Length: 128
View (cartoon, rainbow, N blue to C red):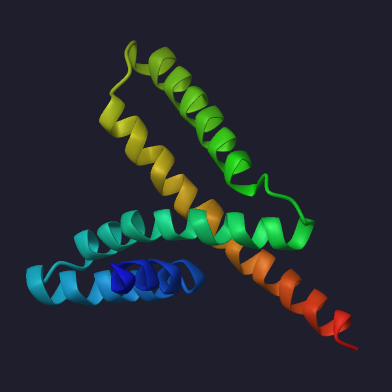
């Protein structure tokens, strides 16, 4: 149980590790770069959400980071579902979920880089 918990902690702190791990394992197994990339993005998104919420909480001294991300995900689901309903006349839940999850990957990757840089700068200036 400790191995599982410690692995999740490491993957949450360094979310590019599960991305690379899933990508290379899946690519070696299936020999398809596109599906390996998409699967790596899907797996890494969960770790990015945990990591970005922890960085947000650390930078802004709050405990609201995870709930803010969940709120943004719910808003995104509503917006994408509404747009899909207007355009196609119905909602395909699988397609909507995949679109929101992949958009979350892009947003969380950008946020992770931004918050990591801000946190590093704050740490450097705080220790001076």
